[in-house]
Length: 170
Image 1 (cartoon, rainbow, N blue to C red):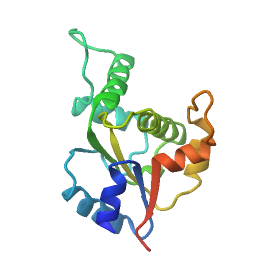
Image 2 (cartoon, rainbow, N blue to C red; image 1 turned 120 degrees about the vertical axis):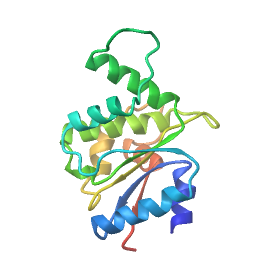
Image 3 (cartoon, helix red, strand yellow; image 1 turned 135 degrees about the vertical axis):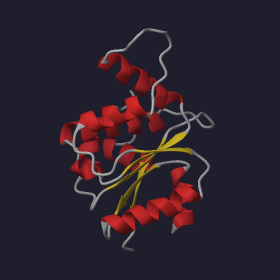
Image 4 (cartoon, one colour; image 1 turned 180 degrees about the vertical axis):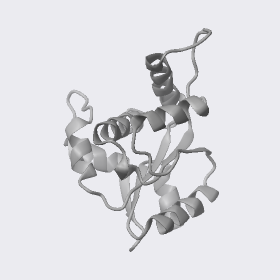
């Protein structure tokens, strides 16, 4: 199952569900050992957007294109979104289902849009999230995903083509 997940991760984001938190973590650990990406593992069980923001500041997951003595929160987030679009790293957010709903969906929308809008061969961010179950996440993302003009796929198809659910209990 690890090899299959590794191959999927090269093309899509992964949502790891099933079994216990410990078993999901072990699956992710086994998976990241075999991939060749720079890995950024966010703190498990983030509940607030501030925890996400603090982590990107701490790890400097943003690259300002101009020098300043300091940057405000909006600038850091803008730089972070640019960093996401220009990077070929693996982001891991475990037990992400506990995060504030509004921010959880917004962050996933940004990551999904990045992979959806990439052309073949371009750098792309890779994302692994884990939570107890799918909990309607696909439907929620389908409601907020950006759809290109003249798109023939439905919003749900776009989400499903860019994020694969892996149930570790199977």
